[in-house]
Amino acid sequence: GAGVSQSPRYKVAKRGQDVALRCDPISGHVSLFWYQQALGQGPEFLTYFQNEAQLDKSGLPSDRFFAERPEGSVSTLKIQRTQQEDSAVYLCASSLGPGGYGYTFGSGTRLTVV
Amino acid sequence: RKEVEQDPGPFNVPEGATVAFNCTYSNSASQSFFWYRQDCRKEPKLLMSVYSSGNEDGRFTAQLNRASQYISLLIRDSKLSDSATYLCVGANSGYALNFGKGTSLLVTP
Image (cartoon, rainbow over all chains, first blue to last red; front, side):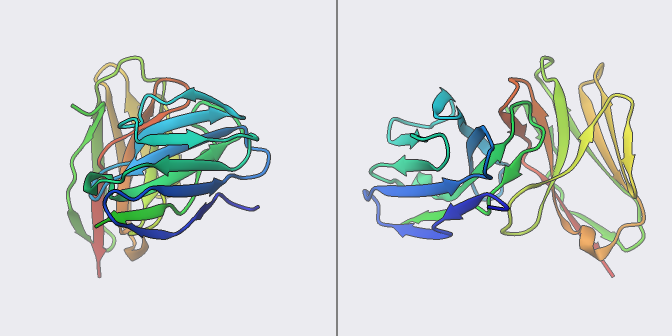
């Protein structure tokens, strides 16, 4: 596609519920990133994929967070047993390569845990 | 302490004014720097890269001072459409971006 597509756009989850957030990167982009942006804050790095390999997951806040990109294209960020502090916008970005250049962000998924 | 610190503002300026944003970074290993713009409820978008030699793009000028670990963005002749949050960004690992909290700008008629 022309841009990075994320779905759903909005998600309301009851505390304790599991959620799955989808990211469809720009075709041919090798690198894929997930960021978490809390209200009034800048985005915080969660995890990085190069093709299907998850090379860095150091930003995932707890073991309730899990990300995958099995075929090196679409990625899913899963959050188990959601908590109120998980409420944030989850941004996906892709780029042709690493280095911070050529990043394109998706519109994000706004997750609200009630 | 965040790796990238910036004044959150808000900066309220009249149309036509010149406004400057500053940010500092703590990781001397940071290699690349950027300014991103984020409109309300939208995704961040790259405004410009920042180089030690300074770079200019129309009304926008960015500057990096590695000795002071300081980055700046100057906006001349502010337009109403410049109203947004400006995010200062460093990259040190080669892929992950370190964002500041953002500086809010409101340009008023």
